[in-house]
Image 1: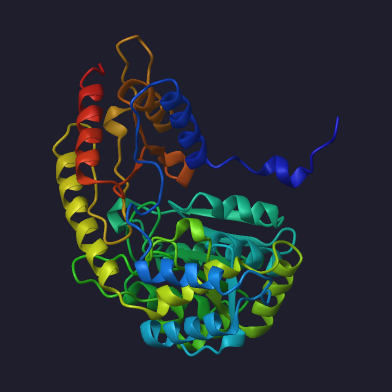
Image 2 (image 1 turned 90 degrees about the horizontal axis):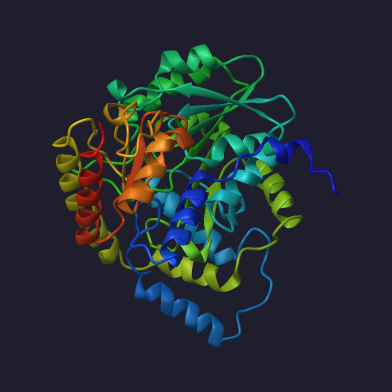
Length: 400
C-alpha cells in the first residue's frame, strides 16, 4: 500500500465540504434539505463581467497567460488598492491566483519554514490552520470572545508572539463571525508589531465590500503605512462580485515576496484561468450598482435573522457588521437529549442532528476553532431562510 506523507496526515478535511456532502446524500435520497452551510453569494455574476468572458472566448483569448496574471488585470488591481484602500502598489507588486485560497497557500509556501509559528485568531476561516500545517509551520490559535466582538486585542497579540513567530493572520469582515476590525483596532495591533520586526501580517479582506450600517472599511497597511513592507493584503472577486466559481483571487505585498509566491504558483497551477481574468478585469473596472443592491439585501436578511434567532431560547447571536454569516452561541442547546435519547454533547452532534432531523445544513463552530457555536450563511433567498429557521425551531422544541 502507498504510504501517505506525514504532512497530509495532519490535515483535516474541510468541515464545510463534509456537511455539504452529507446534505447532498440526503437530498439524493429524496429528503428536502436547506443548506445554510456554503459561503457563496446567491446573486448572479454582474452582466458586464459575464459579457467580458464571452467576448474573451469569441476573440480566442484561451491560451496561457503570464503566471502572475495579465498585465491589465494586475494594473486594475493596483488601481483598486489606490482607490479603495489608499495603498500605493505597482503591477509588479500584484499576484493573481486561482482564488483567494491559492494566494494564501502560495504565501505560506513562500515564507514559512518548518517550526515557524503563525498566529491565527479564533474563530478563523477553516483553511488557515491546515494550510499552515501543509507548509510545516505551527498554527498558534488565539481564542477571541463575543464580549470583544471576536476581535484579537493588542494584549493577546503581545502575549502570543515568540521568537519563532513569523506571521499573523487577520480576516475582516470575518468568516465566520461577520465582525470587523475598525481602524483603531488595527492601529493598536500595529503598535504591538512595531516592537516585533520579525513578524509579518497577512490580512484577508475578501469580504471588504460587504459592510453594513454605513461602516467604513479599513485594512492593516492603510492604517499602519510604515508596516506596509511587512504586510500582504489578500482579496479577490469571489464574494463582492458573486464570482466564486470563476476562481480569481489577488494579493499585494513586498515585491520579493510576490515574486517568490509567483514562483510557487508557476510550479503548481501556473496562470489563473485566462477567461476568468478578463471577467475579473470587467468586474473591477465596471459599475457597482449590483454590488450595492446585494449589500442592501444582505443587510435586511441579517437584521431579520439575528432578531428571530435571539427570540429563541438557548441561542445568543451578535449582530454582524459585514459578510453574510451569523455565528451564534448555541450552548443552551447542548447537553440536551433528542426524542430518541441521543445526547447532543457538542456543536458537531447538534449540526448532524439538525441536518438529519430538520433538513437544515449548518457548520459547527468547532470547524472554526470556536466550539459551542454554529455558522449560518444568509446568502439564500429570504423565504428559504425563513423556512430553515422554522424547521430548526420545530426541531429544538423537541429537545429535553
